[in-house]
Amino acid sequence: MKHVPTRTCLGCRQRRAKHELVRLVRDGDGSVVVDEDGRGTGRGAYVCADPACTERALKAARLGHAFRAACRVGDGLEASVLAPRQVVAGAGHDRRS
Image 1 (cartoon, rainbow, N blue to C red):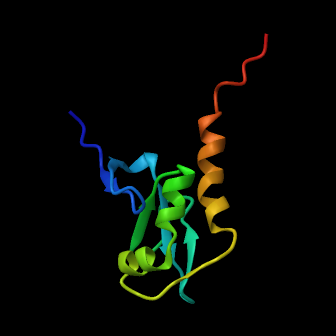
Image 2 (image 1 turned 30 degrees about the vertical axis):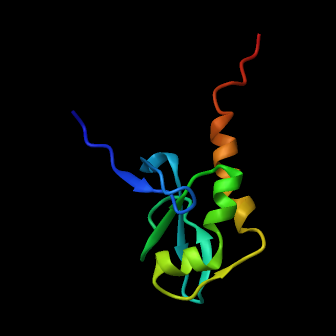
């Protein structure tokens, strides 16, 4: 049986498979960005692509605790978190007759 890595969502605190979550990282100037390929350096925080969960997770206090440092949340971060999963969720369902 193959081991599936799990992570805890910052918003809802549910444990999920790592591939189901979006990884966030804090860059050098303190801004939080989406780590699209999952290979960014440093501490990461994971969040579900659920809008309500994402809103809870992106509060500065939760992110600051997860990253163990002060951080800034940009205006477009929530859209960036939700966008990749919406594309993946619709993949493979565009069948033509």
